[in-house]
Image 1 (cartoon, rainbow, N blue to C red):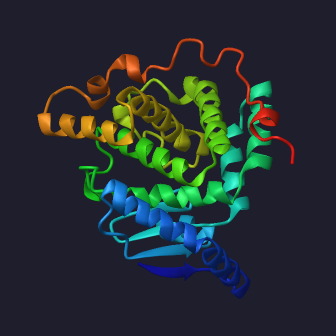
Image 2: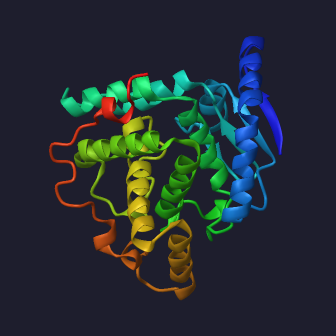
Image 3: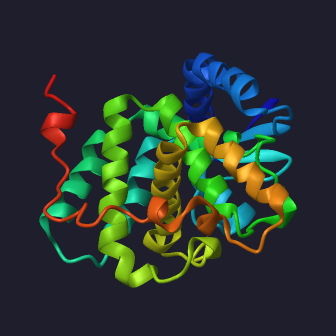
Length: 271
């Protein structure tokens, strides 16, 4: 797999090259993990470490600088870029304790681990355990693939505390934004995918991650969840995948968000 740089100046090139040099051992460990655990056999031909404007405006039109196809992964490794993107999810939300906590989370607690996890998400798409290919995206099971690659990459790159905090942030966002973007089934993943509204774009990703987390727990593990997914594919049933897993599994526990807030001081003790 080649590493290609799409940048606008020598300073940017030097910064991206330094980032790659620093994270390369972890990235190679992750790829070995994907190969051994999740049947990643063919990697993309290259990772394009890209300036965000090149990735978004000049190449794709997708309003986030991380995406993949059968040939390459486009990815921006700038933490500040991702912090700004995630904070845009809060635009237009009335100020509340939850919004304040989310803003603090994205402002202060995002780390290099969070950036690497985004790249890990894109690489996990190459698992041959998923039966769809890039030509059939999106499909009725896209929610499962997107939720699963998010789950796998978070478990690898995030600490336990970071994993829990990100999941809790996702619960808040799906609750706060459900009235605006909810109402469609999991099978209609990506209803807002090509909009400039980052809250709408991410809503289905967070919802899919939370659904897959419940599926993994109910099935007893990631590989067990994959086995159930494969059985659904092989059965060629008219039942949706969500129905196959069971509505009770996918439904969030009643009242889970009532009075909930992100207690950052307990999740991230002061150093």
